[in-house]
Image: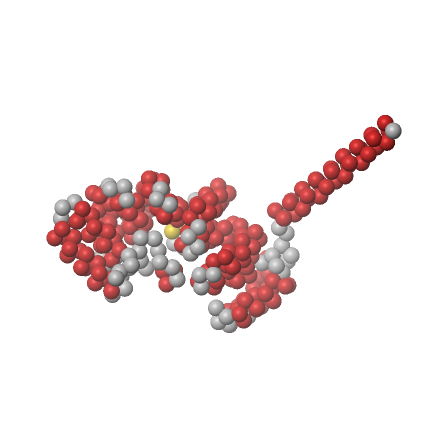
Amino acid sequence: MKYVRKSILTLLFISTLISCNQKQDSKTSEEKVVPKFSQKQQDSLIDIYLKNGAWKKGIYSQDWQKEIDKGLKVDSTVAYFWQQKAMPLFKQSKYELGMHFIDKAVKYNPKKWQDYRAFIKCIFSKEYKDAIKDFKNYQEKYGYGFVMDHSYNFYIGLSYLQLNQFEKAEKLFKEDYQKTIKENGKGWLHHLDLFYYGISKYEQKKYEEALELFDQALEIYPQFSDVQYYKAKILYKIGKPEEGEVLYKNAKENATNGYSINEDNVVYERYPYQIRWP
């Protein structure tokens, strides 16, 4: 009886060990994605199913999706196919559906698409905490960089603004501001970076410092109505209502003429702190 119990315990141990190893192997296989075809072969598939397929269809049509699905049947590890499935959906505010596809793109090529996914979370789906995590994780793996014309710190700072963590936002905008001037000079400062850096100070009632940054933004983009609006608000607050009133009227006129945030994706999404004029 003693030996029977020992044999049963041994069998249970071996069974558990095999099961654990199988689970570990499964996890490892999920993390290590092996492309089905070479890069040259995948480029040929992109020509067939995107250049001569989906891109000849309406971007928001089901035909676009079906053409890409044909390519995915041949090789589901082509990350660009998944990104191209996701992109039109984000532009239609179908975030939940699009995120499933962009997650696939990141799975098969994280270096290419993870920062793009983080951008989508910040500007489109408004998942600010997730955007911060995605950008920080990407920077840990691949370093400082840019996506959609702005630095990762810019989008992390923007996310902090939207989470009312103004000091954290200001710190990141300041780092980018100083980095840009040191490496390239003031001529490389971007009016939108200056706007949000100013907003981070405005929200903390650092009005004089905010005014300096807003003025720098207006030197680059004189008709920037959103900057003019917030500058006018500061002028009211610091006891200069006449100047504020004049600037407010200019801001409204410029907004009517289309001088607002001029990022490419503003046609799909309203950017943080962009004014909704009555």
